[in-house]
Image 1 (cartoon, rainbow, N blue to C red):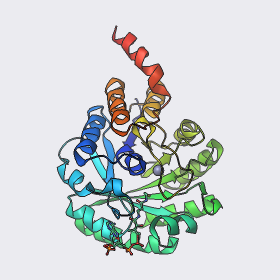
Image 2 (cartoon, protein in one colour):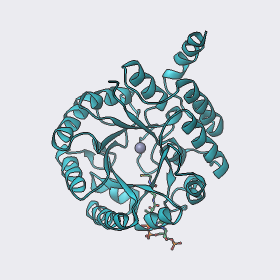
Image 3 (spheres, protein in one colour):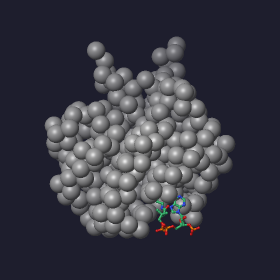
Image 4 (cartoon, rainbow, N blue to C red):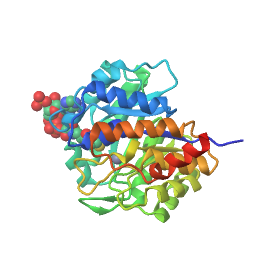
Length: 303
Ligand code: COA
Ligand code: ZN
């Protein structure tokens, strides 16, 4: 039986939050629709953060409220704190993605909290979300290295993951926020997590800063991980993490996994249309490496 892999496109959040050009809500919705039309059935559509801190994400409430939860697509939005949770709930979000930290430096710079405070807030959000019937994904930032504190101890990441899986987080995402991890580190950390918890509630999030994005996806696939974040046209980068560049491109991830025989449910032709749109709207999307090769290949296949 073909094995399925779920790709969550985080371009409308991780991508757009860092672009010089601010998109209108309508344009953000247009991009989300194009990604969904390509069969990407999980999308991170924005973040409920301070519009002063991240102007590009102002209006995520309008974006979220415009999306239908009845279709096949799973929508989530990033939140940094309890206020973000409340705003997401008010906008009708059925899933939120809360950020945890594997370093003090990143927790301070990103959300002005320590690691312990972010954990306490996440515990409160989990309790509230249980009552509200809202899914909580917890993503562990700087899981391999921090731009402020240096290399991350994998034991710290494992401890945070263990704690929040036990506490009932629907999913834990291991995030290489600045693209500093290499495949051997990824293989070892993800293999331990899969051994301890199974793969169903685990995911990975890689940035392609050093051209290791796909290699890291492959290493995690080898460990049994079956959920990956990726970003349309390789958009991405955290405004508060110096050196963070784009996420691994959805096109690259989808092409590799499909050719390896996994089922992502993604239609590559339609995905390239979404990628072209992302480039057109932002003017700066780096684009993945796959697109230039895929375009003539798909045209030839169509005959
Ligand atoms: N959404 C919108 N506004 C928020 C908010 C949220 N989730 N959380 C706090 N605020 C508002 C407060 O209401 C307050 O507004 P006011 O000055 O008009 O009264 C202001 O932001 C400051 O609140 P405070 O609790 O003191 O937070 P802070 O100044 O310590 O900032 C964050 C913390 C988290 C709000 C801010 O750093 C942030 O939004 N960062 C974004 C992080 C991010 O998106 N990183 C990239 C993805 S990981
Ligand atoms: Zn990221």
